[in-house]
Amino acid sequence: MRIMRHLPDPVLRQKAKRVRAIDSSIQQLIDDMVETMQQANGVGLAAPQVGVPLRVIVLQMPGEEPIVIINPKMVKRAGEREVTEGCLSVPGYAGEIKRSISVTVKGQGRQGKAIRLKGTGLMAQALEHELDHLKGILYIDHIESQDKLHKIEPEAEDGRM
Ligand code: NI
Image (cartoon, rainbow, N blue to C red; front, side):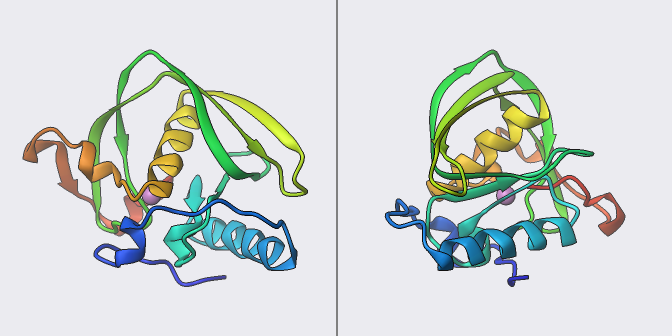
């Protein structure tokens, strides 16, 4: 487990750096990120959210195994839809924003092997959200008007990213 960083922690606005050596500290970071995401009933987490400005993300769709991507890069995005979204680093809020319907991301798996991943629906949304985190962007930056951001109750906070 690691401590979740919340807005306005400046680490959330930093640009994350590329991972050069996938060593034991990165493996520990990944284990801690998966545990931290699961503990919060989240569906995704980016390393800056636990205070580490490196290009590492983890995702876990409901009922599926966790996915790890090191040095992820967006290669394709298609379509647009409005979604409701919440972020583990912005507790107590949810908002409506536009996300792609499908995205393709490439990067490295946890042992460094090249991977390419296509996601649709919630998976595409989570991939875009986590890649935004690596650029210091939060979903609230995509909110078009005040009425698209709402306060939510703690019990409605599952499925954030
Ligand atoms: Ni987030």
